[in-house]
Length: 278
Ligand code: NAD
Image (cartoon, rainbow, N blue to C red; front, side, top):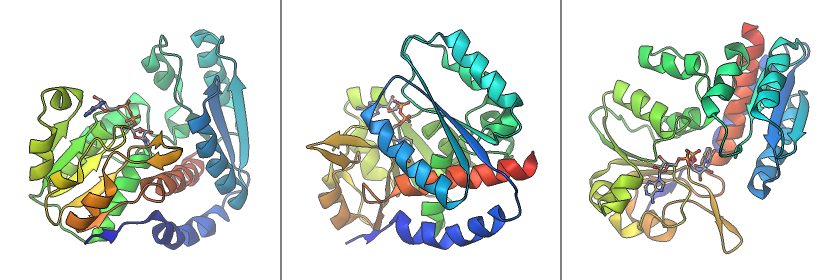
């Protein structure tokens, strides 16, 4: 049976020093931008606001109608870049499908990029520089660290290859000399997911499809980190079939209560770092 890798105790542990660090900075501000409405996003915004309150951060939620143009959105980001009262920028997903996401991430000042999504901040990962890493990536790395398992030479499978989760994690873990395999939609369509999951000492899944990974595929003693979030039967679900996976894994994150709360913590960790650098 697995040990639960829960965010709660880890956040409690890390929170103290963040609160202490916060005291050395005067005013702190976040601009949080979203387009249109999305029910999944609301929960995320609520937990960000809770952290903002705890750390005395001015949280500016800027909501745009779905009809806003990309040009106007980018101009707003550029204004925020110049605003001395704002230390960090959050861009909520989903964004209109037809928008060029690169135009958005390129417009964010790297000093305020607390989500670690600008080409500069992501690109530096290739050179082992850690200016700002995406909070989800920091969470996964912290969770692996907490298992105290040495990842050198381990078989790591990352399911999902997005710029904010799978791509940066694959580089970071390969840099730590793990053997990294990436699975994505093509792997699934070719029915190759079970094969790769069965080989994985460490499985990280970031897709957003409930029960995509069957518990019976999990290797005995594997570490399972489930980043995926979706709503099924009115409940938050991860990508991994938890009950069965729990019996086989050595460590496993629950959903909710695993990666998610730690990610919000690391967003504010990045904010304090940003304010100190500015
Ligand atoms: P994304 O849509 O950008 O990327 C999804 C990836 O999954 C793609 O690489 C795609 O090829 C792959 N994929 C899609 N269907 C697949 C399938 N059937 N089998 C294998 N691979 C498949 O998503 P994202 O922004 O990286 O987010 C992924 C999930 O992680 C979402 O559920 C999101 O809500 C969640 N998420 C959670 C946190 C957290 O803090 N817990 C943070 C970020 C994202």
